[in-house]
Image (cartoon, rainbow, N blue to C red; front, top):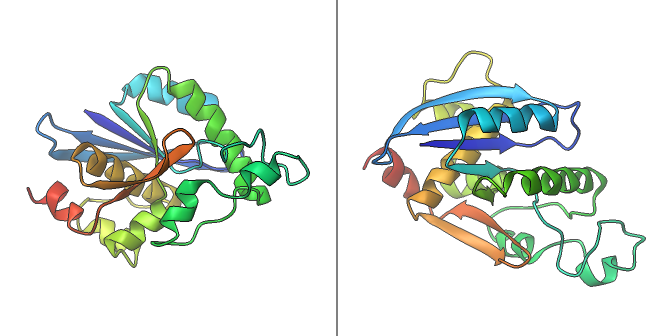
Length: 203
């Protein structure tokens, strides 16, 4: 089984971190691999090559309910607003930016487009690694992930975020997760608590 973690960049010219978590049939982690891509077509080609059982993406994958876009000037902004229910709920655990911020708007639009192309073939869930990091009590992502994996030299912050995203996918499979938001609008998956680490790495 393979879980693909994607730390998606808002612009294709910026690096998108990729992490591939290889898992045995009894859900034991075998290894983790990293890569960096740029264009959507590169990501899609890699995805089809590895054929993952689950894809986890660090990017909003849907619009606020009632919204047709994320433009502040559109009349739909009065209905959909700046956040989905998922963002409102996870603020208990960590801060999130409004989807209408310029950078977030680009990321959301790209995330929706990419996930729509993936969902016909693969199971796709949305993850927020900055909040995942807080739930797990990780202060330094490289140092803390090094306790569980042999990380390659020169691994980037985007690849580390992708790793955290992929690991959350395993929490999801092992039913050690929380789901925030309205399924009809879009949900975000987080670990249930720090004990998920023991469930994944020690059981």
